[in-house]
Amino acid sequence: MTPPPHAQAFLATCGWEDAQILPLAGDASFRRYFRVVDGSRSAVLMDAPPPHEDPRPFIAVAEWLVSRGLSAPAILARDLERGLLLLDDFGNGRLRETLDTDPGRERDLYALATDLLVDLHRHPAMPGLPIHGLDQWLEEVQLFIDWYCPAVEAQVDVEGYRSAWTEVLRPVASDGLGPVTVLRDYHAENIMLVDGREGVAHFGLLDFQDALAGHPAYDLASVLEDARRDVPPGIEREMMDRYMASTADAASFERAYWALAAQRNTRILGVFTRLWKRDNKPGYRRFQPRMWGLLERDLAQPHLAPVRDWFDANLAEEYRRLPWKQAA
Image (cartoon, rainbow, N blue to C red):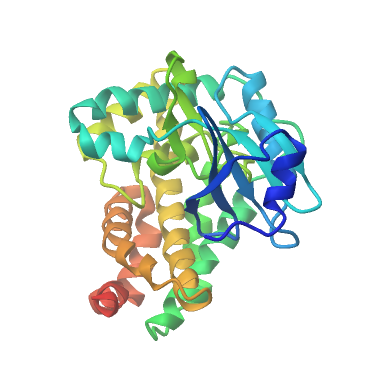
């Protein structure tokens, strides 16, 4: 987490020449974040190095979200050629740690996370976003075949896999709900609690540069079936009902919720395996037990029977637990 060599010169051009640059966070991409401190003021430096990263989608989505009354970081300065952004600092109050420290707030804060999506989905999808529909969903679950199955040396029926997912996801793609703006990585580690702001603006949003135009159930499944923390099933059910109170077709939404939760969790199993095998980040194996637990619960839904049957026929118990055992 060493700052890029041109960071200090960039900060000098925007009035932060005397600031300290402190490591803040990295993520599964090439992006890195630093806290910039100058006396009593602070900001966040995003390093999104070209050609691996392009900060322009982040800027566009951030400005669109703010125009809709939500809290995304203000862009204080930018150097697009070198992939540097200076952002508003939302502080340290991340939802993940807040809930870990004070689990008694879980219901209230997940209610606010749900209400934020209700508010966001009242607006048509942000213009110009790529579509997140059937073709994209099928492409994403292919990551499981491409990365997870080879990692555990499982020989599987690839044609039957795609056929099963198509049967499950095609009704979701044509149910008429959406498209809306899908933040895509909406979960407890990408939500900040911003002091001095009320309502849905109290939640500061991060990591939305991959936003798409897709189904409204996707982000709700993302936050309630979190890859990195357990959400009690009772809270999940309550928040689903809370969201569906604003939906004209609750039955279609619930069907979509379970299907897209299963799709997302399957994709993540593939993504985390790719991070382990390709990017030398074996720590992502520790999430496998939670991901399998979530996926198996999703697949218990009757309308997901084609996919459940494929998993039962192709991946026995040892194939589902192997990466976790290897991480021990």
